[in-house]
Image 1 (cartoon, each protein chain N blue to C red):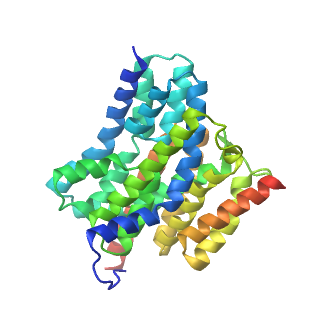
Image 2: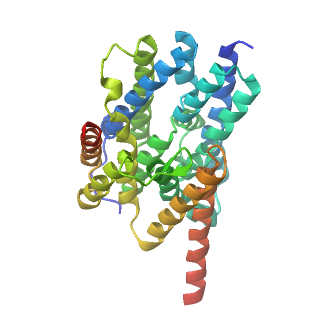
Image 3: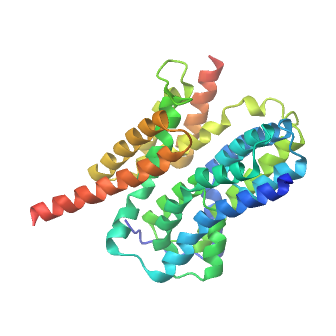
Amino acid sequence: MQSQVPVLSPREEFRHGVGKAVPIMLGYVALAIAYGVLAREAGLTLWETMAMSTFVYAGASQFIATGMFAAAMDPWTIIATTFLVNLRHILMSASLVRYVRKLRFFDLALLGTGITDETFALNSTEYAQRQRHHFFMYGTNLASYLAWNTGSLIGALSGTIVPGLDRLPLDFALPAMFISLLVVQVKDRLLLGTALIAGALSITGAMLVEGNWNIILATILAASIATGWERWKRSGSS
Amino acid sequence: MEKIWVILGMAVVTYIPRMLPLAVLAKVGIPAGFVRWLSFVPVAVLAALLAPELLLENGRPFLTAENYALLAAIPCFAVAAKTRNLLLTVAVGIAAAILLQAL
């Protein structure tokens, strides 16, 4: 579905990217405030709390690492756990290649820093609908990154600067966004089947194994089943 | 070890999986079958992230009226299917979550 819209300038693409990232920003600020408060309570300094958001920039793993720091766990265990929790980004990165393959190494390396569950979901949906300049992705990535770091700073300085904000369920912005993007992406029965299988496998995996393995395993299995089924159908009909 | 070094270590192991496929696969080219496989990844990842968040709590089924996330998800699905509008879906979701929390 490539719409015949006039090509936008890089600056406009960037602005569109920022605009589309508003739901991510809402959710990130809310979640990051919670992270900042927790990290300080767990004994991290302001600088350590911010360094994690600035250099690691991966929500789930930051919460997990905060808990591990508080429990004074072995540094290598913390690093290894972080690696496993964030390994799922490898699939998202590979999946985005087809949209950015002509870019310079510098752009690819920089765009890679901004891949999160949420920016990936948004960017892959947008790029599937129409051609985009890579400044769009810079826009979504930068806006999301700044929101995460702003929220972390607010939380780290004090959880009570914004009384009550942490009690509003603004973090539901993220599942709500996932729902919207999923509905937009499920365009046929094969994709619906893929989503149902991935969801069922992910739930089964989450109940059976520790950690975040369920997401990677469910994604790999569901995508493989969908690819195999499609190939089997085609070979049957020809 | 100083915590800051652990954090920088975390940063490195987080960045590599984010960057490596983009940087490498863009240059070497990807087989058509793998491209097709990758095209199922967005839907699969979204469903794999979303399903446990809505249906589980601490690794166990959470299917009671206390599961606000699941209840708030229902209007989200309805609005998303009807309007395909991201912002509207998110607004309805947050409104539903606030309402459920207040009840």
